[in-house]
Length: 311
Image 1 (cartoon, rainbow, N blue to C red):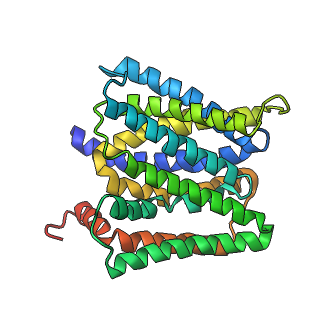
Image 2 (image 1 turned 45 degrees about the vertical axis):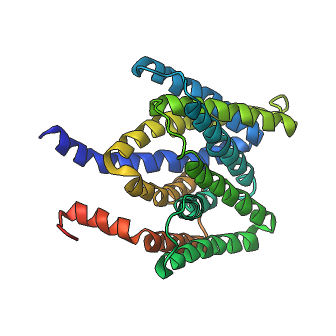
């Protein structure tokens, strides 16, 4: 078996591994938030993860220090939007809703990215089917939010809104960093971005008056923190970059629709959580929206898998 064949066979395994690592992170966040203040929890996660990723980059790459202005701009914008704002809003939102619901709302990121793609980068206007796809996505989130509010009170709507803003921040950040042409290796850029995001999160934590003084850290919380640092931040991103090289961003976007399934299963297994049927329906509607919006990409992926020419 040659190297290419081994790559082809291992790609679905890596795809499933990435979905599992990221899916479990929503439950780990939920466990940690029971004891730790949200922004400080997120900041400490990226302090450690950023240091580990940057050390890895220094050992394995020819260059790990940013030099050119576009590299610093990419790191700064990414640190603020992709790390700090996204995780601040996500962690605050998960104080009101379960990890499974949060994962469904975050699955809007690919749809929101298309919105910013077309509005900020001058892409072509949406056709009727694509517009319907966006509408399905937002209707799906509305379906997810309504049963949550009915069963747990209006505060859950605040949680859904915060996590939705987190998804907006991530989607906007992924577009805002594109104009900057950085030649810094991806792992080095990620490590610096995590560290910058951690600093911004610490500033937010201080502004909110958060402290570890009044908290009791249990072995379960430490295990959740270790999972977020090692599995969800370090290992998952190394897998992400490997898959990005193999399949490209369009196909890799599909991982966003496996993550909520994993989160729901892990939440059921560890915390006894059961998703409301309406939340499941809402997730299905979001996925239909993605399928409509990215129908050409999905068709190309299916054709490539089946080796159908001129499909």
